[in-house]
Image (tube, rainbow, N blue to C red; front, side, top):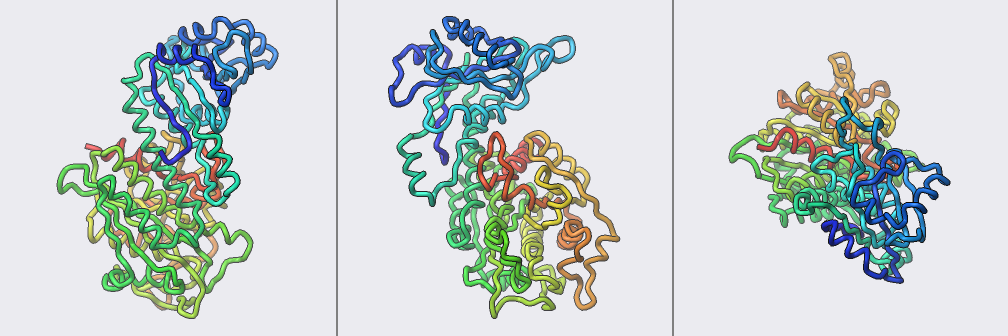
Length: 517
């Protein structure tokens, strides 16, 4: 794993045998039990804690803990408990979660519960989690994998450059969690799946968190090329190859930087031979100074995350390949750095894109759409996808519109937009569809070229989407503006990182639900 936590499945009998063993003095044991209303427990959990039941009840009463979903209670040195620390995690029960007619309703958010539990356990813990639900609460088939996924992601830290904290973490050692079940073998596939997805999200998070002096376009391309180990076909185009293809829009963005320019093509062929692939395109501006139209100094350091779209595509391709998805998927990463220099493009310049359309550069800080324009043209011409989805930290305007709760969704195809919305709702990476129309499209018409690269201040996210739409033709297409979700991410139960890896789980879910044979 790429994270400092280990989850292992065991039977209830094996876990109970472990709980009977003496504790390691250096690593006191933690026991995690799920409880419903009024401390209701599953039969095995109640049996394990029978000698401590009275103390737990008194502690819960004193803390006014009722077992409500999302709440927890930590109890230390409870007499009769087989662990120095007992954590009761509320999952609700009875009429809180019961369906019509009193039947059990699945507890829906084991992903968040896994993160909450990992936070309670803390780094370096040795824990046993009794996956034994109280009466009235049931679990979906992938709940164990989702629980572990939430824990893995909560445990992630980007501390590569903090030598002192890194040393402390190494002394603590990895968190080791035994997840006890009645039939662990039946959940092994879900656990493995959760592990692959955790690695994919963590890959994306690390890419977003890396500084631009480390993650240059060639270095990003090198890391993406490591997906070959999973069976992904990788092709890396340099400046010469892109110039021969006529990618003047993309190349223009990076011509003021000494860091190099790359276009990376990642191809997974797990579906029917010859079937049109689903395509993902990611904006990978590893640092965006704004170019000649330079940004204000305040918070410019955050522009190391302007490649979060490319990071999400890389992570999604990792997830798809790691689980051997039965789908054909191609990912394209446009990797550049936007810097001011004597060679940098200027406002007023006109460039010719790979599509043959000309673009007046009104603002060099509207650079991501130039990168995507040629990347979209490339993937459509060379791979003839059934649909194409681009992800980009494209506009500050989407933050004004949606904050950090939703990604902006723009599309020329209702079915694709509906699929993305449902996939996002399923895993909690939500999208909000924004309007498009001819009146907005007119705003990017230019007096001197086929179009200009910005339509002005008003409706900035919408005019940016219309710019991209001019490069997709009739191909079903969706544009996800993730400026509010891809970097500077809000902290949550499952993310304590500046880069959340947003979009990896969304794209993986989309493929699972709609594009696998």
